[in-house]
Image (tube, one colour):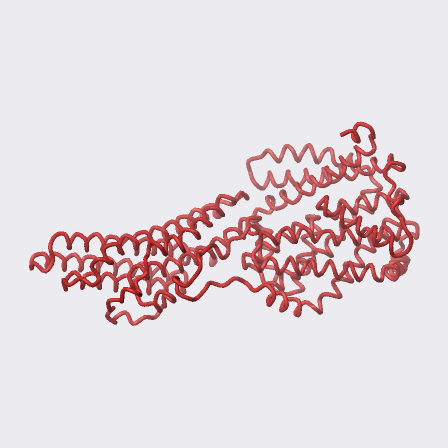
Length: 576
């Protein structure tokens, strides 16, 4: 605090850096809100080839002036399975090239124009619009606030540097030869890591270069370090992503590290190339800030040319090193405690990615629920493992040996409750703004998860009587529970088949299953009344079968409702 009161120039510099970083945050948040989800849709539409991915990464980064935002967005979409690793790498490589536009804007405009005069009306209008209830207007206001704060921050940093020739002279760190270059590269990396913005580091570098506080070659090395420091964003994001997201974060680190190493190794040669290109472009030899911006573009382009031929090899190595998670195919009793496979914090960055991984996790929960319900009904082991779409439903189920009877309650706590808990926790952390249709989808997804859990709970209740009566010496009672088991097998098999269908076909299958369940229930109740009249069953046994018939109906109803949401309506949304 004493530094702020004792040195006005230092205060201006730090305030400028803070305003610059705050402006970046407003610009990122405002752009996401202003696009109303369009940025995410563009991402999925513009990644059909490597060149499209490169172009998308470069253009969007130039628009939002944040390679970190585009990198995080790419990691989120790759984690959600919405883009391929090749497309994600292309976007990140393009973002590195697109971020060079920031250096040009600062060198061409930021250091030569009184930006505070432009910033003031932007800030006033931005505050007014940001208070609007409409997401688009509010996002537009945040964009204006972001740009205004960026301009104001640049202006404050210029004023701060102008009065700090003695207090903060970057030339004091200068050494000789490679030692000096490596030191300034390290300073650039450290500044970017601390400020979480390579643009802020470049602004400091350009201002110090323009003020004569930094040598030209040292400024080039500092720019290389700033580029290397951006890998910290991908590294932090990797901790909250799944293996797919970590693959992209690793690709980003490899790209920036290799580019920085090559650029530093041939820095004198790159400086000569910059001089040659400057003369061709008509840039004055003394315009060091413009030459630095040109260098920043040149060495990022060099990195792109180096890495593009290696991209197929890089993809194979990363996929082998960090394979994607797959659902285990062994029986539930042989599996460790289940947890969410697809949910990851990186997907929380955007509504589309969060909803996508939630859909994937619901399909995982549906698969586990099928297996637990099958176990509760004492269905064969191969059926519990696969819940196949094609079964010989006319085959008569036998009474399983005691060793093959799984405890549904134990399976519920081991495999269902944990995954459901992860889904609830993920939902509670989702705080990005949702469009109306996204809010409806989220509500449908949470209802689907609850339906799956309720179906398993009904199966647990059914197993209570099934455990006692499945091998009863009373033929009618034993036969009744065999019919309930076979009807449960039919429901699971039909739903497994329906999950592979989409749209209208799946809706017809769901309606047919509902009708079949009603017919089975009506026939089963008639059979019970006849057996009561004939004395084959007593009232106690008949009520047990009726209660379990109701539990079987609950299983079917909850599973159908969940499948209609997860598969049928999801397919209709995608088609629409």
